[in-house]
Length: 349
Image (cartoon, rainbow, N blue to C red; front, top):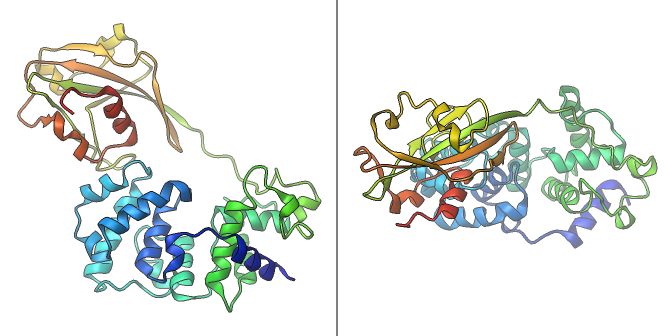
């Protein structure tokens, strides 16, 4: 029994029952693939269910506001995915009359859709022979064929795509693609895979050469930056606070947060004076302040670690554009802010 047959036979027995596997609807498949980018199935599944329930068609998603989409996405991270999701929904609904492109080449033109996602949708929804190469597939191929080329190098990306394209089952591309992805996710796992029960163990080069813990090879990531964030949690006598929308490109674009001041280091309670309050609303207010968390709340992103302090600012009256505390849970916010809101328990929530 060859590689393809062993893989698809294993899949027929071991595949998880997931809702997007029970449909050929390109909207559902596209939605699942965008959600599962950089997200594990167990985390993404509730979001998929929520999106399908709230936006059962691409027209429903297209007609939603960006804030509504970001709010439903809240907690998944990598929010550019949500913004791209909404942009593409509007394009498909209003420019393509609700009909998704039915081939890899045209799917690749959609915002937020790269090689992997286009291949997945084309093969699963339209049975096109388009090989998928995601993290799971890289792991299976590098181990089984003993390939040491870094998977995140230009040459590695080309090499693995060429290999995946050469071994895909041309008669059943959807089945094969889902099988190899599932195999990497649940059998050929990143750490401590159970090679004793692996159907490919007799011909796996990594197992034969004791390279399971070595492969796949990845080039070292860029250095992670450390930043120091100070959020000003303003509260006045009218139970109002201040939320600001992040409009600049970068992390959390178009999400809301408490006014933010960055500092060069983590500040103690006695070092509040080191915050540059010039050009902030506090420069014209009388207020009392206290530090909510003595220890930094560390929020880790892929490229930076945020060391965060929350400063409680109490004043008599905030400007007219202040937000009622009872409404703050309706705003899309980063999970860091959401966690604070839940922990702080504003008296009016």
